[in-house]
Image (cartoon, rainbow, N blue to C red; front, side, top):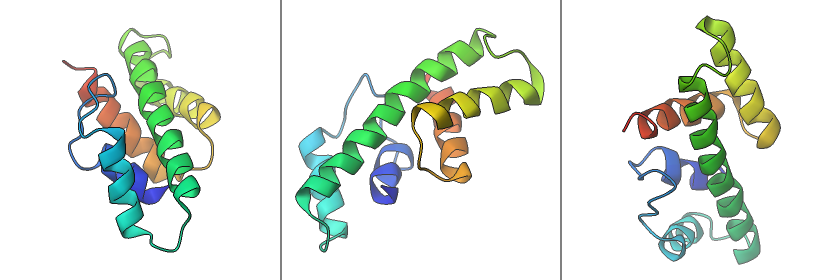
Length: 107
């Protein structure tokens, strides 16, 4: 999951509505880094992180529209929703995904 996360959120990937690189390329990159994992496990990790990328985009749009309130409480509320929709990541990953989502929704 961490490798899929890094590929989608840390290497300048476009917003989820503009998938570049494509799924096959992303999956091949993941498999190149984790030789001991099954292809199915790599695909599942990619699917979960892609779902996160779509959810973070929606949550960041809602955040920008004030649906979570304002101030630090709003940020924490938005991240809590993200955590509930996409469980199993670290707090740092949720915060990084949110920050990237805010950049994606700024345009």
